[in-house]
Length: 404
Image (cartoon, rainbow, N blue to C red; front, side, top):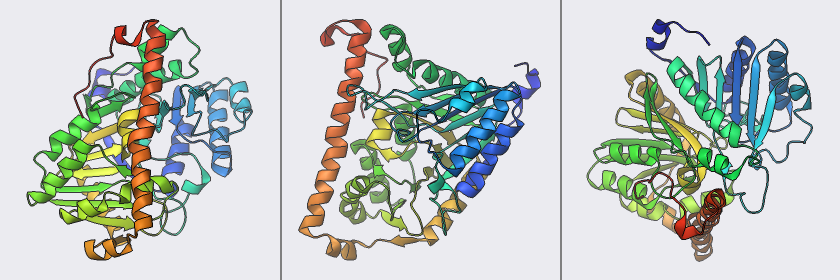
């Protein structure tokens, strides 16, 4: 695509999209306006009203000559019929399911949500493509967040990242080619829109975790929206230190959830956090699915939850913004959600924690911090071994990650 040099130097235009009633019409409008290329990636794509609308819009784009590529995760979209995308493929689009279900690699998942149109406009966030996300997030539909960004450099960077995962998706290439894409370290990259933080499966701290640790080390005000909250020990320690040195830490977590085990695991940490002075709120109106972090004047938004799976086991993408306008919008969103959330107090919380409840919380925490990472990382190492055809102790390691 030809662009003038001036187009690469223009400042990014950022628009916040709250809940499905704002997210999905904006995505469909961008797809309808695309003239050269569309790259669409999501974890969950469900059959239903929205699924049909997006299939129709993507099919129309392919028929008018736009190059359309769609990547959905095989586990996240496992209920989608095998023939669902046949009309889209017949129109000339390319559709792939990331990591088809296999007993020895099911733990490696693509959790990213991304739309790139004409390598000019980008949408990122926590939104999946399913009818339960459609609504205002208060009276109907889950509450989620998205960002619409007009930035050619960011779009080009993400287009390259999409192409790598798209090439890897079916795991049918030669092993060394698979692993070349798999081991690519998602290093942070500064764009006019912000700092792009890409994550893939592996041990240690990802660029997202490293950036969080850096910002939290001097933080005075931390506000986090996370539907699944199970941070690494280091990040949890960072949050506790902010509170103990007199800073203010607010967590807006899920009051209603679609993953009960994740909520149980998150609640296993409440006692320690509340004792340290961390303020915890649980969102009440609908299921919470948004991912947003504001540390002083820095904002993080994207697909990653603050849990072990997103931080260490999934493919994820986050954007770090140092922009006063973005921070003001983020704080306004957090403020609105806080008003619709129930604050937890230590004494009353402890009264609700029976022996049975504590036992369930403990085992949920154990499963998600020990068993799930053990299985997923074991599968990742097996892929690495298969890539080189050597014994595990002779396998070249991928680029190192800082200890987390």
